[in-house]
Image (cartoon, rainbow, N blue to C red; front, top):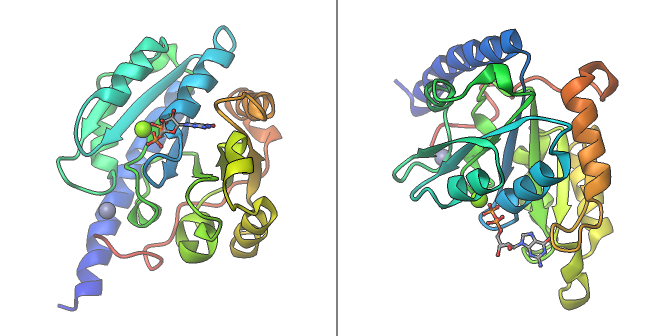
Length: 235
Ligand SMILES: Nc1nc2c(ncn2[C@@H]2O[C@H](COP(=O)(O)OP(=O)(O)O)[C@@H](O)[C@H]2O)c(=O)[nH]1
Ligand SMILES: [Mg+2]
Ligand SMILES: [Zn+2]
């Protein structure tokens, strides 16, 4: 059997579990965002800042995906949110069955919004539907301004792009407009937020958007469905 066919079977099985996760979350009235980026772009910091700003407005839970350690889950717990840590022990992306198992440890009735922090990787997380309602990709000003051109699949599979670490722009060669243009060339429907988790710039706009997404789903732009199985191979 050719390798690509095997990859499609694995992804098809994943789609079934993802549908189950999506159904369970919808039944509990919980909206879900799959947060993806390369290592260190600022996913966990963004979650800390968002949870702090939205305290009293939205109950946010987090599923933390990391290859090893519970460091990020400890940061989420300190931020005051319900959190479950998944350690993949080497695997470079999360899969839907890991999310399904993690849901058992969360009180969904007490949540409005669930974030899944994916493994730091701009490649294969794009191919794995986790049962989320929306995918957001984070890039940052220290990682080079050609990422959407070099890793188009993950930008094509997302609905939201966050460009983080604006505070460092004076110290790096990073053309914000170039990144925005590359990303929109790959995916014209992307909603783009530029922000700094350190200075707080742009965080209000992001948090207002999040609140609308969580409580008035119909008020945010239509989302693309999960990526098709042909778009990425399992790895
Ligand atoms: N200067 C600056 N540093 C940031 C910003 N956001 C995150 N960081 C730092 O970037 C590093 C990686 O952040 P982290 O949230 O752990 O990234 P993750 O691997 O994507 O979860 C940490 O040292 C953060 O303090 C920002 O807006 N500006
Ligand atoms: Mg992290
Ligand atoms: Zn992977």
